[in-house]
Image 1 (cartoon, rainbow, N blue to C red):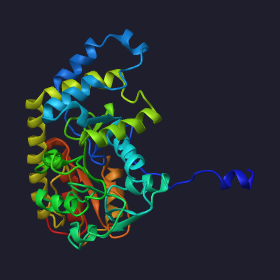
Image 2: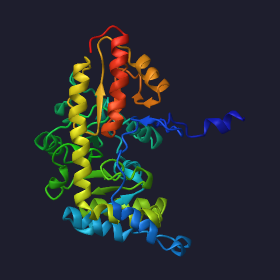
Image 3: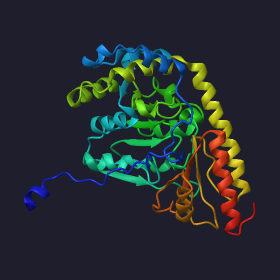
Length: 357
């Protein structure tokens, strides 16, 4: 191909998603919820009028926006929805990170942040987590073009309390601070309670984890009306019809069934705590995860070799091999039955490698 053509192509190193095997496996690699969505979701699908699919969906997604606003006790003009939190976060990068100053985010974090920054030509600096994988809040006191971090963090699972989060927001009132709360329902309090206090704060959440709807691709941001308006302006300049009819009606039903939501979240948290105890018995070490996964390493086992051994036995976990985390595996919390199978293999593997069980 002509060199001048290549020269003007926008090239980035893409985000690499977790594997999606089509055969029957124990899938603990992409942090999906192991339980089905609320029963109202299935009923909504059955009742969906197929004739509506020939029409464009509501570009304002009002039915879902209103349901979320009611659920969180905010006005509808404080809610923005998109095709998964990835879409919402991407729109946030495009909308709010436009100065010549670098945006700040952790060095061990959601790897899509780097991808978006490079795609949109946004300068950025990665701030190193400490030796225990915690954010050092002082690293975010310097001048910047914006701040974003997950809480709990991914892939570490570390959750920072609200006093800590507020300190970062308060030190950055001249720039937008995005708190990515994809896993907050498995952890502690949300930064949403500070939305009215800080006009530089945006909180982003998703239906993919705690609401069991990764396949529907629903994410949302909550902030003050001014920032949400700017976000919508960019969306309407990019793609007016982002939310499809099916996701809208199913999303509403998922929000409404709070009892089922709390029930499945508690089941996952219970299994997570049991899994932590089992991993410790086998000699694994990990930060105290408050998400729906555990980020674990073993002082005597090579992570990549273990990853491949698990995969050969049809058990999928996530491995990066990146700097500082090359000996870590991220293990999604599955059903108790799936985790029992995982630990049955792990016990045999550790014993085979000369460890104690």
